[in-house]
Amino acid sequence: MKRTEIDYRGMAASIEEWIRNVISEASVSGVVVGLSGGLDSAVSAALCAEALGPENVLGLIMPCESMQSDTDDGVKIAENLGIRYRIIDLYPVLQAAVGMFDDTSVLNIANIKSRFRMAMLYAYSSERLVLGTSNYSEILVGYWTKWGDGAADLLPIGRLFKDEVRKIAAVLDLPRWVIERVPSAGLWPGQSDEEEMGVSYNDIRAYFDDGEISESAAARIQKMVSATEHKRNPIVYFSARKWMEDNGF
Image (cartoon, helix red, strand yellow):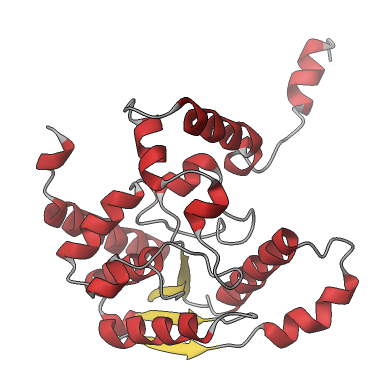
């Protein structure tokens, strides 16, 4: 079946059934999710609201030196879905800790913000699972923070390319402004995911689907994949048992 013929409404229903099974097997009541006002978190939350009922989805909106518009958009998404939400300002936490860091570069501080947010999500995870919001495009090229937004208990859109996430958003009847919003992690004012990566989401899809892509874009993507392999295999173990076997013990 060609991708253009895929029944995305049927796919959404299957994802929702999968969510119900995951939650049931974990013997918890629902999920907690970080709401940024962006497409990925909106779709992830919407799928869970459909699967579990909006009363079983808690959204945390966690500004940390963020633009007010990101907070406002997170609130609008929560209210659109009818889920409970809390606004937790993490900027005072960042201010208190920043003097302890050797590396205060923009990128390192952005990663620290992501890890603060994940710590807060797990602080609210009693009787809930932490809902991850990364899509397949970002996972493949490592465009996520290790032990930040990359840490989660379930990833409903973790095997959907960015354009597929938009198609799921459409069948879920999410607001047009969410679907058309410029992809951004909101890590600093004016930050754009595609500008930061140096390639488009369409380039990433084409690269992994054997589509047409420029040599420069392909080289950039390959470099990102190679440099972030440690993220997709985060814990490396020394094999003591193999060592003993190899050395005759």
